[in-house]
Length: 102
Image (cartoon, rainbow, N blue to C red; front, side, top):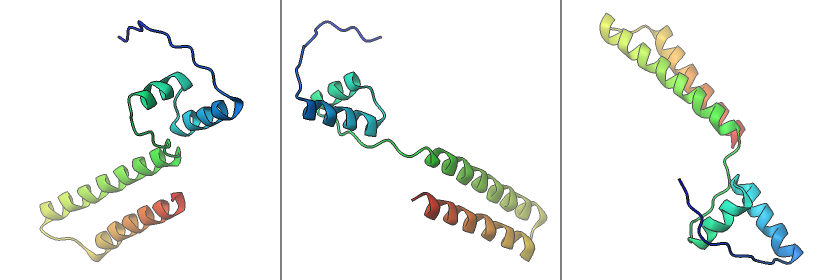
């Protein structure tokens, strides 16, 4: 648990405060947290778009499907062209999602 022991009042011009608000919003942080991170010389990065979580979930599902196909192929000692085409289709779908998101 964080224990705050010092308070530092700071005054900003309207332009400085607007910049601080924009920086905090881009990072997905509160202004107080942004100021703390900047004081500690942390590199702030923009928050990734919400679509990234959907993309990661989809990629995880695709990876899971490919692992299941590989497991089945090893158990059956072979794989059909249809199964290979299914795996290729899943990878192509992942690439389309990535291109659409970026």
